Length: 401
Ligand SMILES: Cc1ncc(COP(=O)(O)O)c(C=O)c1O
Image 1 (cartoon, protein in one colour):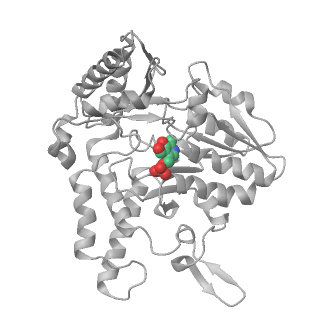
Image 2 (spheres, rainbow, N blue to C red; image 1 turned 60 degrees about the horizontal axis):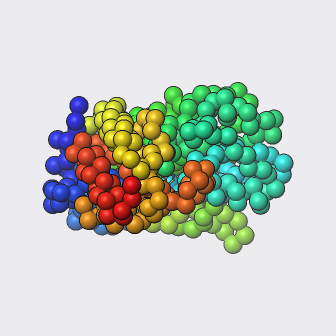
Image 3 (cartoon, protein in one colour; image 1 turned 45 degrees about the vertical axis):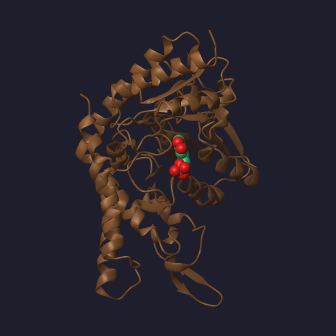
């Protein structure tokens, strides 16, 4: 079941044989095919898109727009529903700034959760503050999960929009988002899904989910940094105003009035992230060629193995022992995660320590900081055991237990 044959596709892993890269939830490593594709654009084109009236620019435009089609196919959307952004944060902010600021009114309720990354919480807190709406939180279960029952408990006639993560970046739990969307749509409520930690790891079909908006980043799924995607149902994108103006999004501009191109173009101001988009299209092809189902199964195996092995160590608390994905949250009791991380680093274990841009989760766990190991298809069981060894060394070093 191991997918270790794909390790050879990653120059960093070929170069540093003793590296245990367990920080994919922050950013994945990049395979050669994506690097080559980005290179190809810069080596052979390098020009702008949508503007040049010459062959080179037409061809670059074709590459850029065909990447949009590939990305659309990756989540079973239509290309007209794919807005290129700078990343998941920009996508989530776009929903809040455009849809939220236009359609949320005084007295409305927005439902979110303590599991959210700041990028899926702060934009809505801002909308609520400006529009005099209220933010409500799905009560989490004792282990920190969102359940359908708990979600229903905060739903009211005033609920206008639900903004939830598909997979938590700290706890790795999968939200029962499909059931939640169904309940919302029976009441005409719009659902914006943060799929930054889902799109890289599991098959997403936006038609099957029936989500209204879905956001993700390229750099967490083998793509370049600086490119992200906002999927929005075309009917919603069409009625949303742009939030940035200028450049290619303009249709007619007069001294006292202006019109815009149709979605998705009306949301793409200025020269786009051309190489990033082309690289992300290649990343989607690459992930599809491996198979998202295989990827989820392998990561889930590694996540479960790591949670089990770490739980066996005296003095280690695993916060999500029942995790179903490749994200494991833990701490060595009494040792600050940043101190422990220096020992992990000495052992070539790359891991994240901190609040993971999700301070509400850290508070929920009654911690100031947690350690996160996150696995991808290029990780192996050896990576898990390297982590376990490094944790034992950190415990020895700090003289605990
Ligand atoms: C769940 C989740 N949402 C949103 C983001 C923001 O993504 P980006 O930093 O690529 O904008 C992240 C990044 O870690 C995340 O994990």
